[in-house]
Image (cartoon, rainbow, N blue to C red; front, side):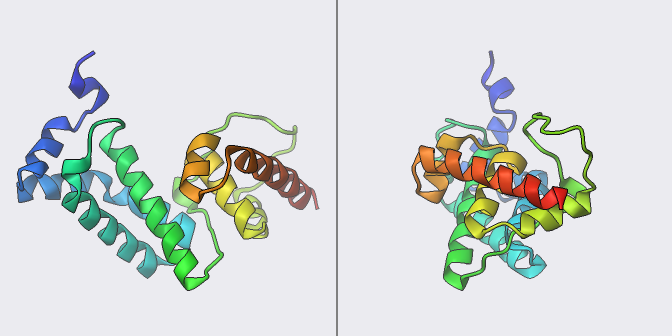
Length: 178
């Protein structure tokens, strides 16, 4: 398999590493909307999400020489955005998470019941969860991270991630059935 199959923007990233501003702008254009959606889901504030995304791109471009193609550029950038959001919330002691209705989808195809829940009800139910549960639910179901990755991002054990996810899922279903 070719490098470009695994890393579709390899040439663009390499041009950015050499300081090519037009390549940076092009790479920015490819990822800004997705990164903004992540910021909105985690911070629930447009201005804060915009600021975090800008800071994430600045950090990414400054540290691009440290990018070793162990993942895609998008996955690497996504981790930067999520870490910045978590740090921002910790500094501001903000414990809110929301879902952007326009970009909502679950990465887990698990069917829990035969019931169908409306998106607004799901959003409200997730917002009613404790902050730790919300973080794990969002990272696992919405962002598609596995428990090992979540444990690294949140600096908790993998077992804690799994147990918080299962407790959060039970609580979420209870809230949805009320």
